[in-house]
Image (cartoon, rainbow, N blue to C red):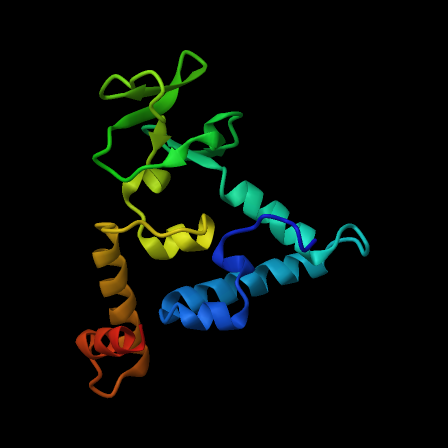
Length: 177
């Protein structure tokens, strides 16, 4: 189990999580691990070791693709698409979807021979807190971070009450970083 390649926050130790200095990710990771542990504990005894279960969940979460249609969103595991790396929005637009029963990725510009083809994980609208939790990396200059951090600070301020505002929470987080 020690050689399994999990890279998301689910595989971080307590010290690594604390070193992130961002309580919303720590709390979300702890909640997710507790939910996964409860699921694991409900499985048939001896089915697999915890580390293998955690790795298997990470494999699915880090590779599943959500395809939105006009009426709903569905999740798929599509061979080879999971090998595409992430590139933030603006690199080039990819339109993914099904047409006549065929899955297609259409780009907004020609991809040159030898150039890496990438997709934007989460449709390019997820912040680094989700990227590190599901994929194990952060994106420098991620525009979605502003929205995530502000919303997280507002939630934390509301929990604390007593006149503490989002600005004070953000200042605390920045001091701890």
